[in-house]
Image (tube, rainbow, N blue to C red; front, side, top):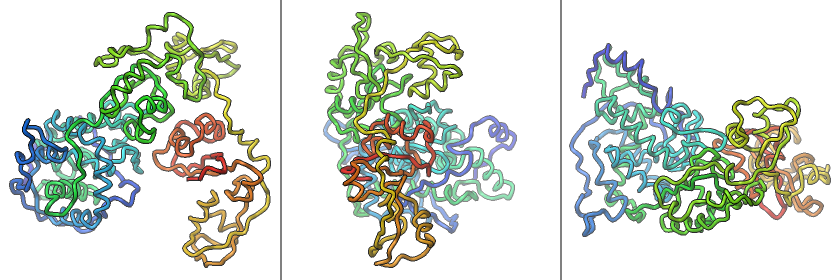
Length: 565
């Protein structure tokens, strides 16, 4: 297939259109779960009508609806079936890793029906519903080295271009609902850019429209075909489309490949509930009667302990728990909307607040009354100190400049020392001691560790919450040196208190250093170790801001009865 574009028109288009999902090739996710890259090029390809063994009518129920999301998904397939060795190599990788296909289906279950709704609404090929397999392995928290995030792996700039907010409270790229709408819209635009050629559209989603146009232009200059399979593309992009087509082929021919399909009914898994205001996420999970971990998988866009002050005021709730959640939310006392947060909200006595909370009827309406939490919860006061800026005060009180200005009816950012501002209430008095209190009795002695079979520097370092480089330095060796069973290693204590029974006997708490992973937030780390968010902030006040960097060290104070996961 040869695509012949008018060069002058193409030049104009390149100057006008935005780049794709990445300015350059997106780096692969840092995960061992991705199929291996293919080193060799194979430009042989053959188009023929799609002849999947799937029968669109065979799996319909008596009312004409498909019984499972797989039946519905396959009925929406519309890409041509292609024979190509690059697809075959990807297909073989998946077949050799059946456990991976099981995990993919488990992760996809809560999201597939919602994704298919958007696929049908945009009238785009059903195969694209499987693009998150390639992009993120259906992990909404996935984060790549090129700063792409979420199921659909939007980079920051492209996310903002398609309306996905990104701030310290919320990242729309991880919002299942918002990012799916954005991704399907983006994909449809890309297909229109390339006159309905979905192979080029998909390559552009990975590599950027401008870059794909340049690759087409290079082939035109050399008199070569300009279809996807003939372009000289980076390895990641050259493997990108074959991966999607391989996954689509697997699910279309599950019986032939002996791939068991997880039973996922073709009915909504979640309902979008407009809560109208800021709400504590832990309390929201309890009101929905589901574990917090499961709740956060449906609402991974929020970075902190509650929904964002300025929205979106929207949550995904499992359909079978939606009415329970709405009922509990309507009955929730107004002063308790943030009662599980690190702040103490004062009780509300003003009669004017009585009608602010939504009624059950309002919760079922599409457009619920919008309001800022500042209008619902009585605020404590903060006295401005000399030299303080509004930005510093917002950061200190875990809020935003916009929220402070709105609460206090400020027209600008200028404030005077001595001014009293309304703020979220003071932090709860935690039961966990401060970092200084807990480390006063830290032993200064060293521990001698005996190397066990299978030990590595990394494993030992993780056990004692120290770095591999420190262990090597303490023992006059290098991390590349081989460890021998029975070998004695010196492990120093002090600031990095050892997680040992000896220290546990003298001190009920221990200090560990957690290494920040891509996509981590302080809120996620506080949940991981079950420590109060406010305490985690205090322990790392001088080193941790709202945005963490991979590799950064975070101090976490744990009860000795709690494992350092």
